Length: 467
Image (cartoon, rainbow, N blue to C red; front, side, top):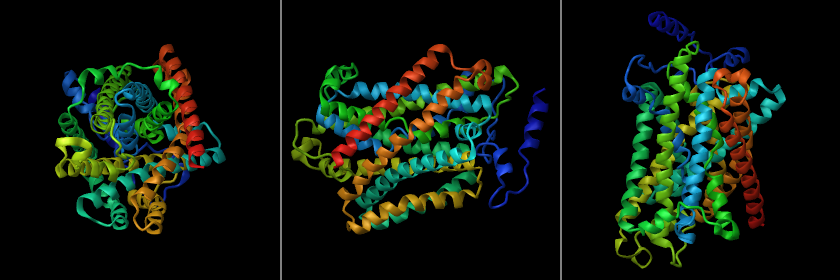
């Protein structure tokens, strides 16, 4: 029985050579991320740990979106201004992310289609195109944070002028093309290495900063002051708004299909959902730890000081200034921060590339070589950053102002990903016996309403502050 299944899979994977652009009909009937879909064989009779190792990987690609450069400033500023009080917000945001990402993985495993494909199927052509435009801009907005973070990191580490650093980030398409040739497991391993660098750097810096541990753990208990203090509420909304990324929901529904699953076998599907959820929750727990470390670092080093920590360069300079961070100040700490920033930008770049391919193929049924798709989306993202960099003569403060605009657009795009996800996974005709349990459905809708409401409020507040 198993032999016949694998023979059938191997026949399905033999496809004719693709044209530069595939037809609408061909693309619409294709698999999500066709070149890696079902490419990883899952052991049938292995034990728990061996099976978990096989399913481990997609979660780390998802987790990258929750610790990208766009989140850094908000988390560190939260600690610098309100010490450990906003750790509870980081915890709640992470729990919501775990719920939504597990639903995205389940959607892909059960249906064999990603969120973009299913959304397109449920809409007409004009609506599908409009949704693609919105989501594509969300990918570009994510790219902006990655480009700025990577460009500034290159400037801090190697003294490369910011304009040239931004241009260098455009060449990452070549890196990704090489990684895709090596296999999806290699991509997962490389991203995991970059995330490990981020985790180790901030763990070390927090250890040196000597945080107050009782106050730290108390920060995970929600406080009424978060709601009553307007400035604290605004920053809390920023943390929540920057946590759940719309592109991650599309990505999660697709890369959960990289493991080979027999969808006609109930046990096989149930096992895939179980282990994909475990993987996702473990990796998102790492993202939660990283975001907590960022906030704790801000609290331990900058709370009660008059220093400005609103920009990456401010943080870099502060870490080597003994008047701000005390005796632990060192150029090494600054360099480690820059290394972590570069790792974050590059790991986010990989996941952004995959998300762009999923969205383009799913919404408008347009397939093109990965290098062409990546080059187009990257150039579209680099252009506004490059214009700002040239116009403001490489002024980091002005360029980092683009981060605010990018986060606002991500907030606008979020409902167009999260609402369809909850609807589809709560649809019994679509999901069958794997439809959301009642408590999951109600919790997901509650989280959706909260996230959308908070994002709308954040947008209004941001626009108001920008005037």
